[in-house]
Image (cartoon, rainbow, N blue to C red; front, side):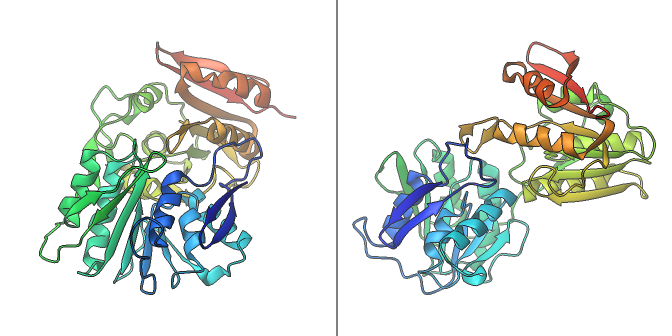
Length: 389
């Protein structure tokens, strides 16, 4: 737990799920800079927060929690299930009631009118583009638009998006390696429609994915082409056995689970990701390729916590090793532990990862075994089997 001090009060904040080993903060200098600006501490008058305040991309709920007592029911819009859960926990810890903020996902309809738009710049430029397009119709001539991010996250292309979709844009001076973005809505500007989602067909050298149509909503990793790790996995994809329960864990656009379903239409596939955009992409990919009576479930959640123990035959996993800008194995560790609990005795976890990550060490501790199925100079594909005990 770590404390964010503001002129409105101090807040004890945590990420989700809480992990005492996790040394990463639940807020950044960019969040603190934006809150100081809103309170009138940064050479400008305080921003009027009496209207509809929309907070986009609030990573762990720091902005929403601080604003909950000072804005009229701020509206958080996030692509992250984990960020949404962290926000709920942080609001409760701060003593706010459940209705102190309205929590929306990037798949929900945004407010019809926004008087203050606050944007925590995401890692994905595509996700920023899509969300600005979705929110632009709700802005008016008097809307205050302020973005925030670390200087390493704000590029010329970032500012060009604000300029093209919202209106005239400028940046602040840097404070503690953070910067603010100020955009003035231009009612005459025709931003056009979002170019997302996008789709493409996998080429013949894509193993079990050859010929599949892949659909990507904004923010999905490698949205214009198949990433090389998934491509390698598809060339060695295990075949489910009849009416097996397969989980595509950290599914992204769902190509692994979809390929498994196409190969074995009797299998039930559960697609799980903490990104709402990813789950929407996986469902679109599955619908574009699977046979009509194939069974699938689509879950935005925290690893395998929503799956009953001992009910899964096969888990396919390409775990992320970043949390926003930070490198961490916390997500992979949680996925591996959840997979072991969810698998039936004899069930298998197949994991693709960069060779240097050393996933085999963790898997051997959890499962007592880890077999190298295939490898190349960059990737290793591992198989761990849950024992009878």
